[in-house]
Image (cartoon, rainbow, N blue to C red; front, side, top):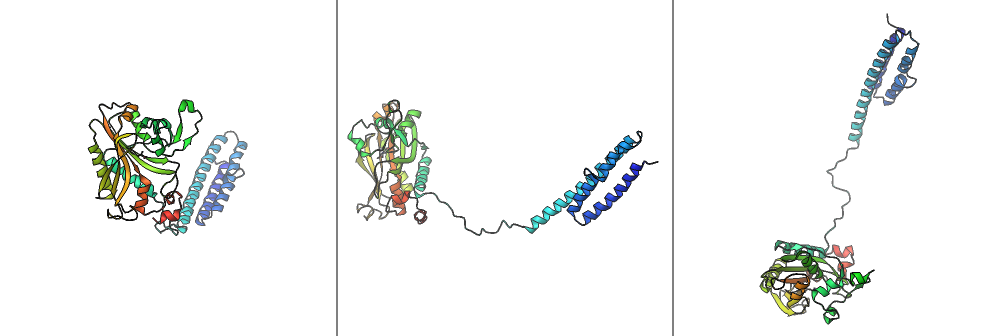
Length: 352
Ligand code: DAH
């Protein structure tokens, strides 16, 4: 004979089944929650029934407790299942009512950035030298006087220093550091790399340089690319070959002229001109009617420089060059004032 508690349990089960089916059919979430608390909440029917087990005769308690608990778990499981089915349906409905077509074009055009003209030139030049086996090196923009001048064979107080108007930097401890300055050219990277790697060495070093100078064709900050190749047997013929090949790849076939020039760190030294990119050599306003444009300085690395970098100058020879990038960018893009390149007026840059 069944105890009263278990009979009541059967009734509750039947009642629960009816209510659950009704709430599910009506897709009524609130009703499902109410059902949950009225059966299984702290004052729910099943909870109270379970609590009443304590008042049953001792021999009935274990069985009644166990059965009620089982039923509670089973019913609660059914309810959770229905609830999660509901949630899933609600999510699907929300997704299909807010459908997002990711294939539609945007309503506002996204502004596209572009590489700065100077950096475009640097990147193209760098790529050409890398293809000829040069590695890219860098150095600091705040440099030691000793590396910017001294090791490059500019004696202290020599008038050759006046070729480069220098920004000196006040260093916190000049006595242990030596004098500091904003590098006036990328040539100190040669010294750093030769001291670090020795020979053979084949590098290019693009970067910013600074001089106390400012007008339509001079900016206090500008860009250079330094090149250096030191190895046994490197001659002036290699210098001419590498630079001519670079010029032809970068500017196309045209005249190339090597003019003797002086730089303390090379001997012999040269300046290199190319047939004007505008008139092809006939003479125009840009080339001041000479037909030529100067683009770089170069020469055979001075033995004093090799020795100052710990390289045996009896055994090794090499050449170096320095290209001014900004002036080339100005000519290629037809820019008449250097400052346009650095004032970062987007309207101007967009017009290029
Ligand atoms: N550093 C020189 C300048 O800024 C350019 C230069 C000339 C670099 C001859 C070189 C070189 O490496 O060999 O005027």
